[in-house]
Every structure is written in structure tokens, then in C-alpha cells.
Length: 273
Image (cartoon, rainbow, N blue to C red; front, side, top):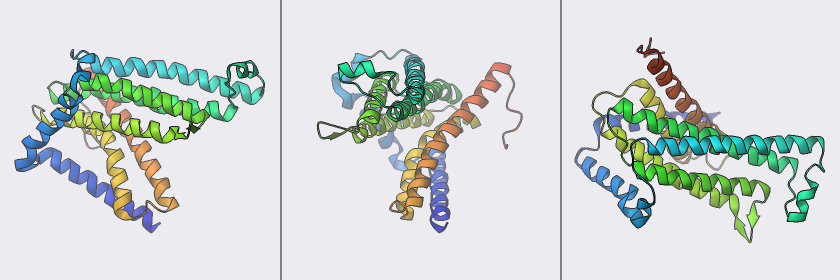
């Protein structure tokens, strides 16, 4: 219990620190941080950044479209997994092609596809659409966000493959997919932070929820390491819940609040609830 309380205290302290920094900037390092961030998002990628268009709204569309496709893939994998629970030989004919899935591996792959591919991409895509509007500015880098959507899709595909066989040719597939996922996620966080830094006025509550949902992953990881509970089972359990729970809940809450206010044309009834 002490590990949980300590980790949660550090987590919220770091979240408050990030809020303070976003509100007040980094003083003399502010411009340097912004310049470095934009360099990493675009110029550091070289010719690769020109593979996609940078039209306004193109990034959110790319994420949402791919998220919808992943939902279809997830439903297929889950259906097949449930089917094989009922009939273990249902997909036996695929063994002729060297593919012999089990019910467990299909359901495991379906979880990756729906959480990271479907829901995750839809939440990030919606955030890329909403946050610039709440900040009354443009997304810092439409090109990078669009390009990163394909990296995210590849990472989910690798994780889906890893759900069937965690090691291929001596390579840890789950680890490789996770690394790709983290790189893509950090790029999105940087992009959204740069967008918020250009805001023209106060940021509404839904915007803060979306940005905190993104920041929860690195902040929770840092909190677990700082508290020293990363080596305990409780700490690892808590990290999984803080990372996944905060991202999905805070992002979904921010999107829901924005959608309800935007669709009705009325401001939020209460900003404190």
C-alpha cells in the first residue's frame, strides 16, 4: 500500500508540475525547446516528411480512418478467437499456409488491435482535430502527425503478430512493437504540446483533459521509477493501470465534453465537476 500511495503522490506532483510548465513556459529555454521540438518533428526526418501532405485536418483524418480499419480487424480477430473456443479445428485449413492460430492468440491479438489500433487511434485522431480548435491555432505539424499514424499502425501490426508468436528469428516481436509504439506516441505528445504552446487565450477544460491523457503515459512511467516501485509487482500493476486508464479515460472525457458542447452550441454547464 505504501508503494501505491507514494507512486500516486509522485504522479500527481509531476502532473501539476507539467501543468505549471505549460502555463508559464520554460523561461529563457522556451524558444529553444519549441525550436528543437519542431526540428525533431519535421527537419530531422529529412525527405521522409515530404511523403505525406500537410493540409489542415489531414492528420486527424488519417488517424481516424486507420482507427476504423483497426476496429474491423479487431472484430474479425475476436470473432475468430471466440469461434475457435467453440470449435478448435475451425481454422485448421490455414495450417497448410503455415498459420496455426489458437483461440488465446487470436483474442490476445484482438485486444491489441482494438485498444491500440482502434480505440487508441480514434482518440488520438479526435484529439488532433479538437485541440487546435480549442487553442485557436493550427496543429504544429500536420505532416508529422500524418506520417506517425502509419508508424503507429505498423507498431500495432507488429504487436498483433507478436500476440501469435512473441519471438521470430530470435527477435522479440512484442518489444520491437512496443518501441515503435513509444516513438510514435512521443511524437504525438510533442506535436500537441507545441500546438498548446501557440494557443491564443486560455485552453478549455476538454483540451486539458486531452493533453493530460497524452502526458499520463510518460508521467506515470517517471513516477514509478522515481518512487522506486518499478521493481515490485504492485508498482508494475499500478503503472499499467495509470498508463492505460488515464489515457483512455481522460482522452475520452475530453472528447465527450467537447462534442457535447460543440454539438449543442452551449458552454459546459460546470467547469468544476
